[in-house]
Figure 1 (cartoon, rainbow, N blue to C red):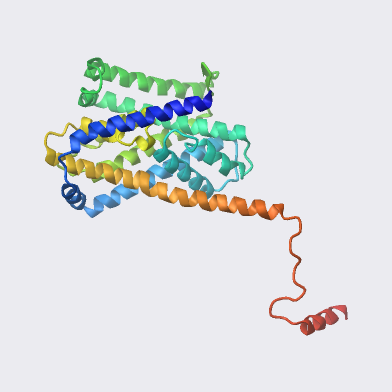
Figure 2: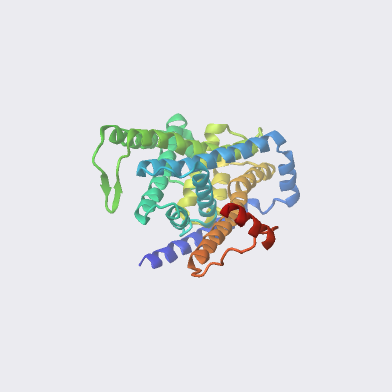
Length: 350
C-alpha cells in the first residue's frame, strides 16, 4: 500500500511539473537567452556575494534542525561537523529529488545508525526536523499576513477571492500565530501530547522549543534572501513582500510533490510578482535561476559526492571486518635488514 502511495504522489508531482512548465512557457516564450544573460550580468557582484552568504545561513540553520532533534533525543557526542554534513546532504538531495526516500529517512538512517542511533530514534529525528520546518513556515506566514494582508491579492488569479481579501488574510495570519502560541504554551506548561489521527505531537522542553522558533525562521529568511539580493532594485518590492511570495511559492511547490518544485515554484513566484512587461521578466528569471543554482544545484552536486564517499567508506569497513585472515605484519621492518634487527634484540636480551 505504501508503494502504491509513493507511485501515486510521484505521478502527481510529474503532472504538476508538466502543467507548470507549460504555463510558465506561456509567460516566458518571448524571452531570449541574450536577455537572460544580460540580466545575470546586471546583478552587482556584492549582491551575488550576499546571496551566497544567505545560502550559507539557510544551510547552517538546517544543520541546527538536526542538532535540535538530537538534543531532544538526549543524544550527545556527535560532532557538529558530522551533523552539518549529514543535514546538508539530506536537504540538498530532498530539495532536488522531492518527497522521496531520500527526503530525510534513508540518508539520515545510514548516517546516524553508524553513530549508534536506533531506527526509532532516527524516525523521531526526521519527524521533528520536518515539524520544525513547518513551524517556521507557519510562524513567518502568520507574521507576513498580519503585517501586510494585501500580499495574498498578488495571487488573485490562483486563489479564491475569499482568501485574497485583506481582512480574511489577516484573520488567517492571526490563526497561524495562534497555533504557534498554543505550541509554546504546550511546551512551557507541559500539555499532554496532541494526537491527530495517527499523528502525535509531543511538546518538547522549552529549551528545545525556543531553538526551534529561532532556527526555522532563520532558514527561511536565508533562503528568501537569495532571491531578494538577486532582484534588481527597480523590481524589488521589499524584503517582507519577497519573503511572503517565497513562502507561498515554496509551500505550493512542496505540496505539489514536484521534484525540486520545478516549474511550480517559478510559476507561483512570477504570478505573485505581477510583472507588467516582458522587459521585467528576464531580471526576475535571473534571480530565480540564482536561487536554484545556490540553494539547489550546487548543494546537490556536492551532496552526491558526499554520499559516494560515505558509502565507499562504509563498504571498505564492511569488507575489512569480513576478512577472517588479515595479513600478518612483516618480519622485517621497512628500511631495516635482518642483521640490524638481530643486534637490537641481543641488546634487549642483555
